[in-house]
Length: 251
Ligand code: ADP
Ligand code: MG
Ligand code: MG
Image (cartoon, rainbow, N blue to C red):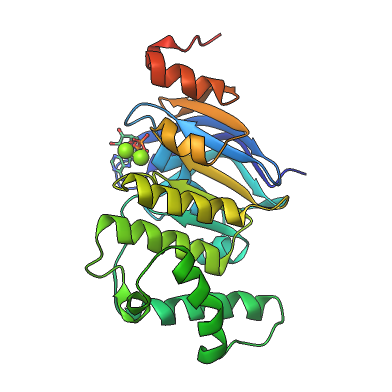
């Protein structure tokens, strides 16, 4: 079965009941890279948030199967332990918890689930340190609190560090290119590409061709009014960049 199979997914804002997702169908298999594009407000971020179980949204219909298991009734933490990773468009700060401790806790929670012994701080440092170097981050950043006082670019690099240290079967990357300069984007793209194996998949949301040139999607989807209205290969992205969303024929 596919890694992720979303069928007829509808979801609303919990507080107001306003429907945002209006019947999303999406299938992602192992090793595939998918990109979602679409105008502002089309529901892209909401889709990724609903997939990870964000508490602001309520699933009102349809199914989300991840590795054949129904995600809808799982807590966000369980979804994460099951192998789903999400980068947030605006990552949260966690006061009083250092990046190093946060990463070590996350890694040990996964090791425990797999029946592996916990890593000690020294052992873990030797794992995390080369990855910090790869992302051209200052090692001092490991001692800082999670996301506290980070610049936009530092936050994005930090999210990719989390992904590369924690690992994921499916990474949901929401606008990881926003606020990154060209060099930072390249570092982040190299790190993401370095994580890809025939088993790992990525769903990325972007407005920009430059990210798709660096992380090449197997499929590009167009989202509008809470639905995926077209799916194709990367030529769709090229077409949108040249002629805008209006240039995409919807039949
Ligand atoms: P995109 O990521 O494609 O720009 P979003 O998924 O962020 O779009 O938002 C889709 C629509 O749903 C927008 O009109 C947005 O204002 C609305 N929306 C999303 N989340 C909420 C929320 N928590 N409360 C109210 N409206 C929301
Ligand atoms: Mg947006
Ligand atoms: Mg968004």
